[in-house]
Image (cartoon, rainbow, N blue to C red; front, side):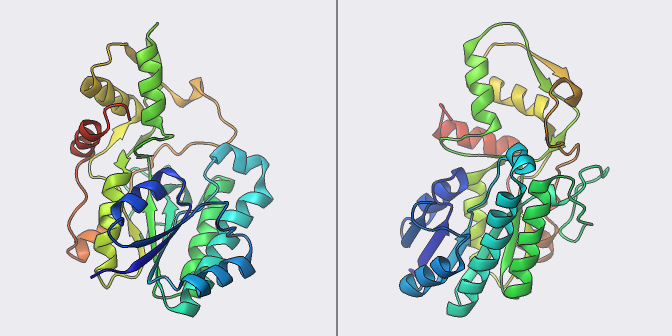
Length: 283
């Protein structure tokens, strides 16, 4: 069955993968130039004009360090933008999936975070995204909030693309952080599972990350091995790369809702990486 899909943040990495995934449907690709999510009036007018059956809200301020210095802007985009999209989607009764992040958690747990884990964000980015999550679910009870983490996808930008560029440049051994752990996740896999969610009765928060876990160091070694990059990599701690916004030591998410609702599990991150690099050897 064909339906219409409006994708906010369509110019971003995940947005582009979603546009490709739903290419056999009617896609309204809304980048920043087409839709300012911080304007309630503009969002409602656009939704009423297009009447999409499905809305996938990817638009966000995701530059974690910039959010620390541009706090007002971060909350305008990540909180109010999500609220405006939820209000408009509810008014026209569109299915709504809003994309969120592991940064809503404190990031120091010893185990992966399930959907109902305690949310204690340590950054402005995480705080603004959590405010957006709550706005979406308070405004529109039928909505889905899909949390993702450690994304890479065709064209980037992402950690994978940065490592491939640096690795191909050659030189001395690269230092890569080995005390942060997460679930490397392909946007292609996320897009596939968003389609599955649309065909389910799931509501509320859903984690969508690939299975298995790795540190950034382990992820880099896997990338280099599959691409055939010979530059050496050495492990270091986060102290070697101080950043304005602290990075979570634990970004792992547990896809508990997918299991409980008997939805096909996400692939293991190594399998997803292998499949991605076969399709996109240059990233």
